[in-house]
Length: 519
Picture 1 (cartoon, rainbow, N blue to C red):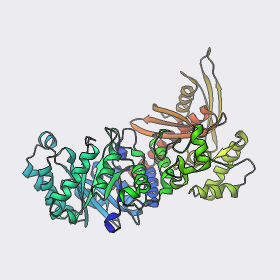
Picture 2: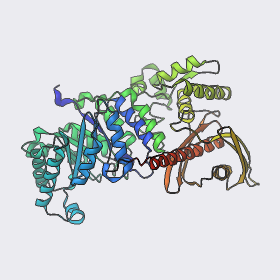
Picture 3: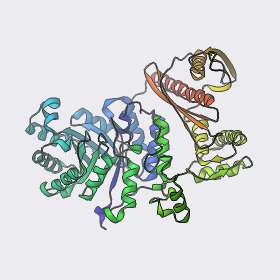
Picture 4: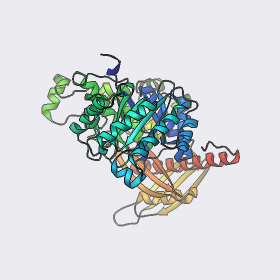
């Protein structure tokens, strides 16, 4: 294989993925995801759309400063103010990429842009030339390429490559293409754009018809050498191409595709869970590669086959993607050193203070559960070692509930050395708890989404609760875990409350020192 046989992975979880309704992440969460993407070997991290908000601008700045190996991309429309913002945000990047886009389909040109084909070509060329003043690496995307006139698309691509574009991306913006059709489009571009050899062909597919992964793989077979994708396939509408699925398809069927990626596949499940945690989007049990059932076998015939020879029913080994869905790992007699060692095996590094918190929770859990699994340990770390410093923590909880009585609760919260107690009623015990928390904290949250899932199996399994709460227009995700689902619910809500407090404190501090990076 030659150099062209490597497929670049362009991850847009922090940009296109975050456009999924309800998927927004705060700065700290974005950085945690970006660091995980860097560790797993992503080639390009699209960190945001700098011109649209100060939050996106700051995210691109932070990721640009952090990334050592990955290129960092900032998205821009084909206008100078967007490109200026992207260039400014990427100043600290070791490998900056400016990604400019402009629609080329007839429906977009006529109804959205109201420009003629000649005007579109000139705008695209001018944008690429302007972006080249700030970055050697410039990507151009003809938006809605899969519905564009092919002859016009060839013309645009030839012009932007001549202007200096090093990557040309062919978006299936609305998920309209069929695999055979989309693969043929890539072949036609290779055969009809004279200077196509001077640029990498990229693909960016949406999943409106459930074909984003299939379309991306068809494109690779036909010569594309960059795939734009997101962790867990999150994104606008039905989402984007799933990173873990295309990576493992290319790896598992290297005999068919004849290409490879630089992704460290053992990091896949860890990154998947991290993104799920920060966005509040629960991973479906039957989700390929990272779902809870991906490597579990119910059929007796399948179980017998796997026990005799795993490859009878498993084309991917669980350990290849860092899957930790099976296996007892710890018990109540395990010590702090054993916990630290096991967490390290799970690629979780804690400082002494964080380890103390996690160990205390582990001991409490091991007294309640007969078996403590890897998923339990991951949930403990996610729940107890939070990315924000807790302002409020749960002291105690008393719930009175039943079929013939109105639920009543007494909630005690701690804030520093002080304790605060409130009694409340509600539509159910969880609602009553949230009313009490609001009364104590003074914050009024509107619950937008509530979800609970079992972390492991059995009657003593931990429940992991994820909530999305609206605090005066700020939508914040919270996560909590416990063997008691009411306690887990309160912890999840408090996690969201603490994030709101941290965000308010950071905003006040920025205002106080007149800090800003607004483009």
